[in-house]
Image (cartoon, rainbow, N blue to C red):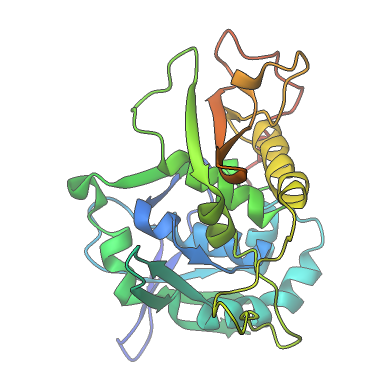
Amino acid sequence: MNIQEEFDGQMIFSNINTNPSNYVVMDNSLIMARQNLSLQEFKLIRLIIMQIIANDLDFRFYEVSPADFARIIGNQDISNIYHAANSLCDGLMSKKIELCSEDGSWVKYNWTSMARYDSKTKKMQIKLNSDLKPFLLGLVEKGYYTQYSYDNIAQMSSTHAGRIFEMLLANIKTHKLPNEGISIILTKQQIIDGCMLYKKDKKGNILIDPETKQPVEKYERISQLKAKVIKKACEEITDKTMYYVPFETEDGDKKHGVEDIKSGKSIVAFKFYINMIYHPNVPKKKENRVVQIVQN
């Protein structure tokens, strides 16, 4: 890894490893937390997290050019990424991660402690917030973490798909998926929180119901949530990752589709079927389902 030390000796910058087959590794509680990132912010912060290696004891300052970032995520409009660099870093500096407990307790963190753009090198320089160390460092010893190769999310077109993909993986309890696949349950609330599906005002603040004092959900009907978020996420995960997560099957087999779970008359959770696309009982792969990213 190419390391460059500044003249004042205060900061060390590490060039980004752009190999998309490297792993993004996070504590499961971080994955299940409330996150409100745009698609490009989501991909950029995961690219930064991908730089962490197993024996790291601290975070470094990582630098990446907008051109390299655009190439990694398959964005052909490189000039647009350069123009968006400022807003991208603003988002990572200002947007919060919120971890909530069942008893109503919560804690909020910023993603980064520093972000800047160097006009001479034409690179963004980013450092993760040190408060996130328990969620990103030394995870092998803790054992409660999820990892996936960055190329699974690199060319996704929906943040919701990326977040549901992560939450599904966080709930896989086996080291290797069996040939027959497994079922995973995500509650409605986990999906709403994980994807931050709440109504917002013109300033981007979440609207609060004056009576219940709770955030107002973005979708009033469960059919909207399923059609606009869950179905699209399943299609994109199946199309762009190594995993097969059908929303519904051609033969109508509910066992291999998303199944509603009810409490009384209300839908409170969803059962997903997940398998690897290369397992023998999974429908034949589409051509170019998993996009190969060419390295320079």
